[in-house]
Image (tube, rainbow, N blue to C red; front, side, top):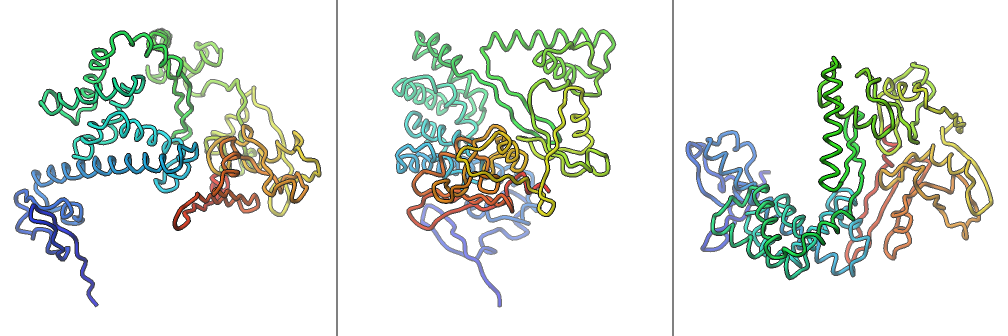
Length: 437
């Protein structure tokens, strides 16, 4: 049996549903770009390999406009969901399930969506018209975030006028940001100092896990502080380089910065090992990996699996402390039973060793709350088997109406269910720390 798929083709006359094969040009039409509906372009698969250069460029334009419109739709939908949920702090958790991103990413998108809908209607309209993607729009959001709504709308309207006059390309995020910054200074010249103080009050440090046993330490600092710090790092790195150090300047800057933060002399680095750790981190490593019998199973809390040789380098560092964890010989899970309501420190350490992370995010277990999986009032048991690590956010989230968070420490399976007016949405999966073994 042959199944024919019909797709809509749009024109000024309306919409016509035609077979998908008929909606695309035949092989002889690929010699030059052919204008047909965006639905037809987006329906292309193998036909893309037959496009000419002009046709490929046209396809890029279709892809860009489609992304921009999708970003506009997402922004409006997120703002609507935020409104329907009464501005609940857990909207990000619900949106993250559908968007398939982390809660932090979902929250950033919600903040951007609210700014676009409430403060930057012209920018949002440009997105809907296929001019701005979310990345470009986010630059306008960032520049205007410390303005009140009236002034933000003024900047938004003036910026839109400049774009429509063709003063700069709408797709150039750098130009858009620079133009928006100048307009902010024009509409509120007296507020520059206030905005700067407000921005400086939001300074922060973030740790962003990367790949291949690397992470990024991100510091949002006042401009002059950041410039001075970089100048110091660059000066010391160049001094080492001029002294014959064979590391690249980028490696030297990274190592010098780490050494300064850890209070270590930079001149002692040999370029082959990282600066020794002077703060508390948890490294989980099976005994066979520690004894070089295997390179599997090592995991750094809050980051994830790391190669055995790297784990052994960390473990053999002079500043490292070893601690054995006794486990059930059958399941390998640490076990401790108690009838008291509050967990002992030993029990917390057992759960930190077992769970490693909050099962619903990547916060290391040693920085999480102890949570009774079955309420203490119900079973009267405070134990490792009835306890788990939850970050503060997810600890409170489980008590929100309509939300259900379940975790089985034996299998490492975590299930999160969001409140829904219609069919229930849920996400089930193995806790990330268990998935790695």
